[in-house]
Image (cartoon, rainbow, N blue to C red; front, side, top):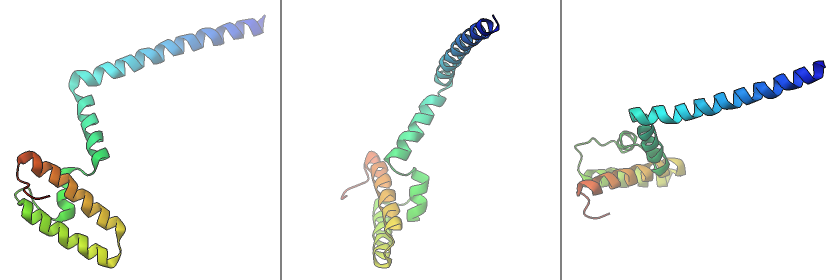
Amino acid sequence: MAFRLLANLIVMGSGIMARAVMQAYRQALTNPNKSGVAQETMQNVVNRVKGLAEPEARQILGVTEKSSWEEVLHKYDTLFERNAKTGSFYLQSKVQKAKECLQALYETKGQVTVG
């Protein structure tokens, strides 16, 4: 008798928990869409997957927002060659990714003439 009662409580409790979890999940999906947080988060994820964020790329190459594309290329060449000589592949790859990030940005502005 006690076993049957305990089994019924477990089955009913798990059903209630499953419905509560599903309701919370639906609510979590609905709330970010109302405020635009989901889109912003997704954009940040996409930027990170593609490479670096623009401020980080500028910091790595040591350029400002007002820097020309030629200045960016000059800084890239200098840093890339310097790290090629010292053998730091990690830093070389960070410099390369920073250049690619800024190249995409400058291309959208129409300022890149030669890649």
